[in-house]
Length: 136
Length: 153
Image (cartoon, rainbow over all chains, first blue to last red; front, side, top):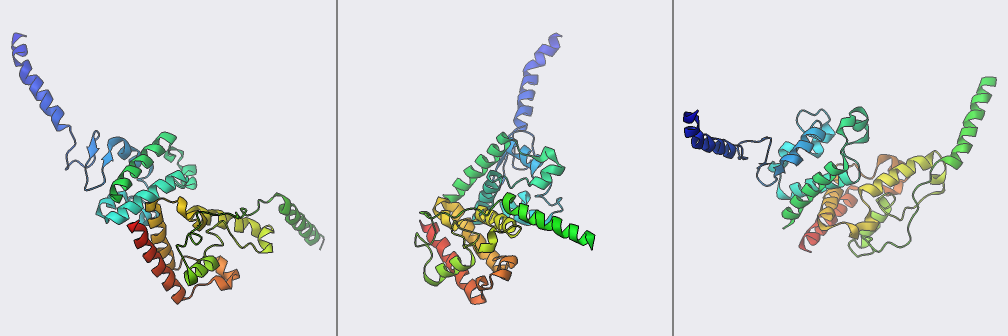
């Protein structure tokens, strides 16, 4: 038992070190906690979770609706010009605020894809902050 | 023969009832202080083209022919005008913030280049609203120019 306590500082430091490693890094694209850092557009974990759950089925390469993919591919956002990023953010805000996204017929088939008021606010405020930054 | 009469009678009755229950197209607004043309952002020939080919769905000043109030046409017109105004309303242009103005102008260029607008079902009846290649060209040029001006604001 005594021996164990002798090692406790080492244990503590080890734990701290492990904790540090949990912090987000550039190379961890989908860490569960913290911020995922990309070129200009960053996704806080909460935002990323909503996008993954509610938007990603159609707006990613795995989607099979070509129109949806042409309008927006989340994974391509950071490859776009600043101007197109701005337009994407503005389109995201408008389509959520107007209740166009997620589409009604999609929600009929997948009721779990509906955005709650809080989720909608989270996404639009996030997109608004990025758009404002891009306008500078 | 009897069946035909009954079916015809039912259809007629449905048509008459539809005149009373079907919702009408959205009403126009006389005063539009935020209107694009009123604010001098489009002039002359371009303003004319916009009024003639776009304003029937994308403004609060739609030219409604008499039959647009008659069901079932009214239902289609109502749908297209409501959707058109939600997408882009030139009568409320100044309510858009800078970045939305820029995006709307970019989209104006896109739908013209891709021949998505004006809608085929609209120009079918409104032949005069069809845009020639030269018309499209001047509208695209105008949208690009207004983008630059908006950017500089």
